Length: 180
Image (cartoon, rainbow, N blue to C red; front, side):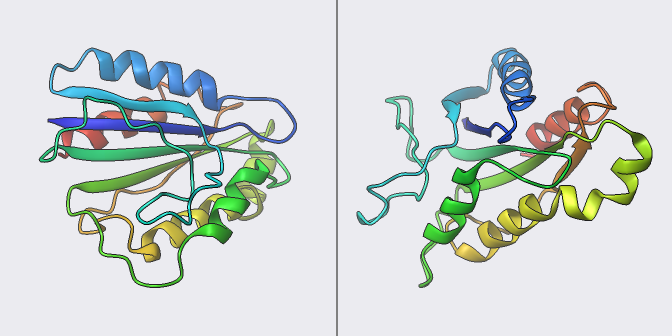
């Protein structure tokens, strides 16, 4: 069984694609019999993260968790045209434990960075700025030890104002699920 959690982060300026993309992902995942949806919701800082084994982000555990299930946590991070992201993304990066954690062999993560550039020229020239924090978030997650990194999916970086979800997001999500 495959359990998928989706945590989305709206940008600070309010132009949000992350919740729309979350809805799209949920619709697709609900059509797959082998997939069970876990926690779907906004990326929030877990103030109880100091508890043993707690994630630095809030995630509600549902009763459908099965010990031998594979769990994928998908982070959808909206990035403003100037590169700013929701403050919870930065707070969570700071809360990632510094000491070595034994990763759950069945737990993986993937990141989709949703850029909000409105001009193709700006999107190309400013990609490093727009996606910088999402790239750092990916690096922190990869080195945290919280996830099994034997399967490392390519981080999606897409400009949602220029490309619809069917261009980049849908194929990325389908390949992610099919690779399990």
